[in-house]
Length: 227
Ligand code: AP5
Image 1 (cartoon, rainbow, N blue to C red):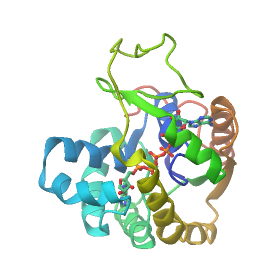
Image 2 (cartoon, rainbow, N blue to C red):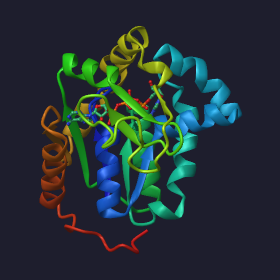
Image 3 (cartoon, helix red, strand yellow):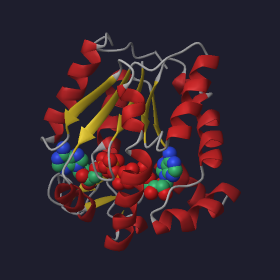
């Protein structure tokens, strides 16, 4: 099962990709998370990406495509992957098609999470994550079970993303509308494009995505040793 979750900043791509990854045991590939790890590690790619991400712009296609090609070769992608944050431009979508064709694979579904802009802003403003394990939360919509303590690892340290400030968020919306939205017609022209109401509650969005996956023939549960 190779699927793409599309949507503007804050639509819930990362949240839903993690739910799907736990359920289907395939690779979860979040290019934003990968870039943040590169920035933290101070690699050449991270140094090139840092100021671009802080400005809310897109990292150049050639850098991202190389990073993705390397990631797709990892063992956890052997039986499929969920892409969150890639592709973000038509050249990235074309490069993905070429990589899949080379491996004689295809895309099962491209799912757009539709969310109004005022809700996106509210979601991004309240988002935070655990500084230790990276688990994601929201002050209102997805709080920790015990205030100030991570549900997953018990840490009491949390962080906000540097690009979640209002000025950068505005630039990220512009980048989405100008550079990423044009990939919707690219996929609409094929029979693999679906839209889901991303405004619904977290569980309802997960159920709607899983309904799409059943419709396209993905088994209800992929075996646990499937990669
Ligand atoms: P990236 O990290 O991919 O950011 P993004 O696309 O802007 O998406 P977000 O992570 O902000 O949102 P999300 O949709 O994952 O929402 P989430 O699930 O967290 O990219 C960052 C930067 O990296 C880019 O700006 C760019 O510079 C660079 N980059 C990355 N990929 C690139 C590429 N391919 N090409 C070029 N550059 C690239 O949810 C948000 C909040 O809402 C959470 O707190 C969550 O708890 C809450 N929430 C989620 N769903 C619901 C719901 N249904 N109801 C209520 N609350 C919800």
